[in-house]
Image (cartoon, rainbow, N blue to C red; front, side, top):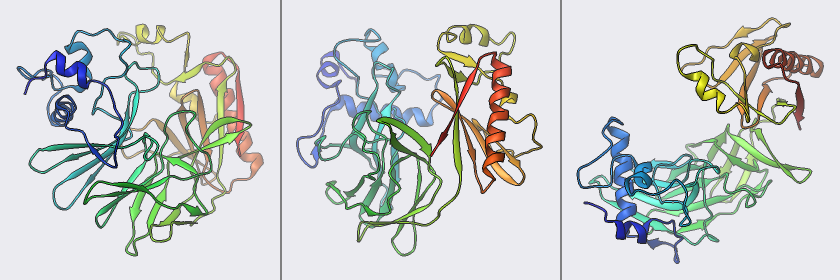
Length: 362
């Protein structure tokens, strides 16, 4: 099925539902879903389907000859990060929310829709009022009988509520969404976490990140503990109390850190040169302590983190948006933890030739 320019112009924008739910039978949206699903299983070199939109959803702007930015706003897409895909035993795939790219992109958008992809390839898209179900990304989705329980989100800046933990129920019989109670010892404004249903119908969550407010500013830290949520009562329980600590190492001049090795002849020099006003290159070797004995923990697969043991305590060093996070994953003495972080800071300063500042997250 081809998509004409007139259909595209009428249907290109995200829209919220007016009911709970509202079916969105929009040809352009459905084609974008099919294109994204096609791209999941096909080689990216196959960038066109004769007479159709194309197999890579982000090509819509190029396909219709649009400028990178225009006044019409983001183009609706199914190429998303932070969305969930929950398979149902009857063959349906229940896809919820997610975001396209990041805030700097002209098509950045966080979605609050539900997309149902059936086993026969049919597509149904449901929208919801923004005030009922806010744009949701990096949440978890847990199948519980005929419901999907949605926990957490990052959401748009300015619409986050540190300390709260959003929980919603998606009814798979009619696709209604309802908020669920969320009380007790909550994990806070959590996102990028894992979730699992236990044999008693309790949802266990762990990992991820938590957004907090410090002095009126948003601060993101790792989630160190495990929690349990009972959908029948809406009550949270904290399952662990880990004495882990997190530090941030930041460039004193406000630049971000970029881990891209400068490999001669690979074209990386030109790429990095275009980012020199914003980022500082850091060698992977600079992320390890220089004056402490350590044992490297090798990852099972590709990783953007470095992990090692110091005095039998795991330490994780990872790049964040504008800084480098150091997490001490155990009951290491405070003086030792501070000294390890200071050692890594000095190594980064030596590697970059720029001063750094250290901040402890509490």
